[in-house]
Image (cartoon, rainbow over all chains, first blue to last red):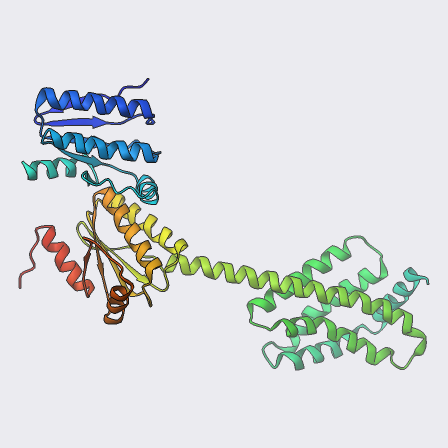
Length: 117
Length: 273
């Protein structure tokens, strides 16, 4: 099973998803993130999904859940680099990723987190 | 009945009277199209067709039938593009029958030959009609795609602010196109504010509103904020009476207001020079 690495830079956790997401790897990512947030007291999570071309409703829901979990650790989640096709798919599925911020790229995502803190 | 023989005799007869028949045929066609093309052009076109028809009738070579069909298709397509009606186009072929009939009417012994000839002309007439309608359909579908292209421009208003002026009725296919183009432009330009201007959208019903909401939420997923502008008084009344909720999406009366809002959100200020 592919594992998604989590990188801590300053007070922010960077997650760059470079693989085709499987259900197990997303669940694993959620667990890893929760552990990392608890251990490091980071105040922001940036999830880069530039390389993700396919999403389904499960992954959409998991992203929202990751947002809610981060919130419990007082960290804000920003999803960056979503492709237009992915955005259209999520909209058609009726998922609007409530509770999660979005930004065009990692730079803008970081600016959102810095603006908050 | 000796079909082959009658056809060949007819071919000989037509060849003998070629100039007279083509002349009369061209006159008949010209009188039908009311001066939209000149006698010389028609004479030239029909002369070519006539030769092919004679070749088909005489059965001398196998390629004549294919060439005739191609020539006829070409002629019909030209007519369709030039805005001739279907009957004018078909009459162009059928009037050859009339031109020939005027010649053979005197001689009673030509009846079987004329019948065989007439059958071929009928087939050609139908062929013309088919080619004509195919050409028309092609024109219409070309126009539809041109209109689709024209109707969805995405313009850059400012650094980081783009606008989509929508003109015409929004259906699912168009919304899809608008959405894709808007999202692609957001990604390509790195803009984080989009204004959707619906001044040119005649009516906003629940379906159109649904489409707009989808577009806005897809743009939000990319991290861009959307404003809907160009809401006219009647449209506002319709939206309210239909009970459509735009939620937390900003709506403005004019594109200028929306631009002002976008500038403010981007932390920019317009001051007199």
